[in-house]
Length: 319
Ligand code: SER
Image 1 (cartoon, rainbow, N blue to C red):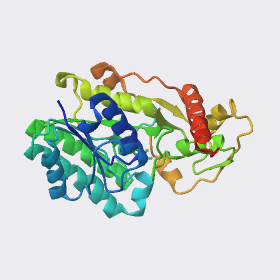
Image 2 (image 1 turned 180 degrees about the vertical axis):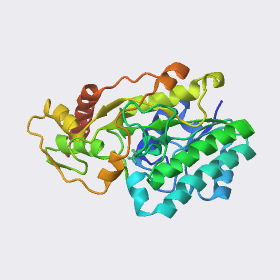
Image 3 (image 1 turned 90 degrees about the horizontal axis):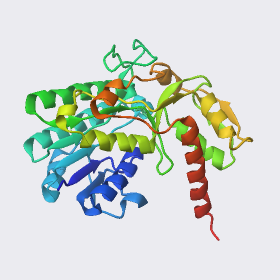
Image 4 (image 1 turned 90 degrees about the vertical axis):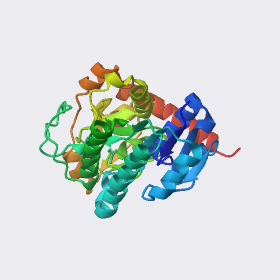
């Protein structure tokens, strides 16, 4: 029986991944941790406050709960990272090294750590970006993720640690909100649409980025972690693809259901980050190695996002 630790559990991915792991593994077997207090969704199970920069606190929690597996999600995303580069490096890098070292010194068998499309940069081929290609990221977030990938592979080769990772595209879900990312617009746009409000987009209308619906992202993560070790040929991080679209295309797909929806464009500093990321990703290695296949395209995601957010809004209206 595994006992799982999730860091950054209050984040966009952490909230949903913790929920799913608790359903599959048993609530008491999944210890949620975050530097912030637990959100509503996490209150049904064990929670510990954890600053991932505090190695002794991390070790204490690992020993207290006899942790055997870690999902290390705590990080600062791309746009927020540009505001505080050194702090971002510390949290993203030292945090990962603390987890890798803690794993080496304890009974941790397997680690999941998310990388990102941000590992790519302006010199990377942007269409169908291959698994192995030029990587010259120019955000501190991307630099920390690329360095992190090298560390993960190093710990696998040098210490035999079973570290697994995917390069997530922008993640879109209705249960939790992202914070500080360049792909965040694709979540906020649905919230505005169901609230019948206009949306001001911080990217240009034709900026194409790789994206993924949250249930596909959760399933990819779980399937990767379930795969037998001999199937995992990539120990840095797997390319992972769901769909690609521009703000104009997501707005058009929303208008199919909400014709009066209005979008305007006011690109800010995040445009430069988006311009240097791929348009689309070749994830054939993940498909070949552990059978990855996405289920959601833009149309299917829009339908589900609008339905779920509308239900949520209605449930929130007082009688
Ligand atoms: N969604 C992230 C961001 O925009 C990319 O990994 O920063």
